Image (cartoon, rainbow, N blue to C red; front, side):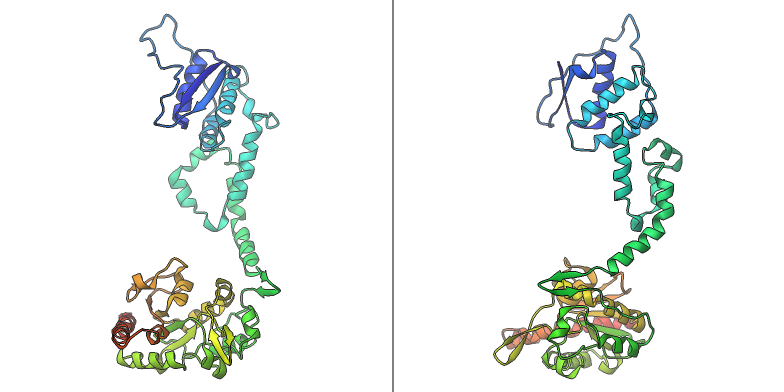
Length: 384
């Protein structure tokens, strides 16, 4: 038994395999061993090849299809890939040149498995034909084992994307008997129609303990849309957003920033009040990711109908609903950003955080920063 130790890359395997073929070493006589860069290998072929030989070394030819397949197989982490590839190489160069066409052969079946794997991981929603052709011109696709699948996969892509979207819209999360599903926001250009539909929303469990839906307030075409987290106790009782202590502080800050509250659209990421009882009081609870996901269609509908020049996210919940859970308001506040939902976004703290500052000096400092962030949003809206 001959042992070949090598760094596990296709190039190193190819070099060793070519020498093994020239030496006439059959697959059953080789033990392939992967090594790391910090370990010297037991090189079967470490001696220099003679500069001249009495007889020229034989040349071996294999189908381009095999080389393309071998490169893909080499990317796998299974150590048995090397003896398998050499076994195929040996058979292709020793009288079985049409081996790859015999799909039922045990050694060749892996190609069919690769096609199955490729078809299953193919994401029609992310396919970019131009990028595929830039990476590898179409004339070379015929050398890929999955090439026969590509035309049909591309043809089916639009239908598969539509099917994926329908399945996503129908997803239901269940926990302890409660269900969360995407809210049934109607496709309309009327805020009144949206508000009336949202009044009957039961897409998440929050409606069970809330007094009513608290939908957004303002006019279509507002230059600024302010997005908070969720309604509070007073908002839940009246059905209007931002009228409690945080809302009163917001009104004052808007005025100082030169923004007319009546000219902006104000809404929340979640439309129902989430709370827990503490004595006779209802204490705010942070909405979960499921609550936010269920309510997202209402926010998307509001953005579509209002079409604000700038969206102002108040606090981490609103900001992360737009930019994802890794977004940090403390690092990005006061900047004009872009998002998939709306062209320009400015993030800042929620006005309720100003009420929780430990002392008067902190409250003044944070309030001044909050007003400055609102000023950034106003200037961005005026620059349209």
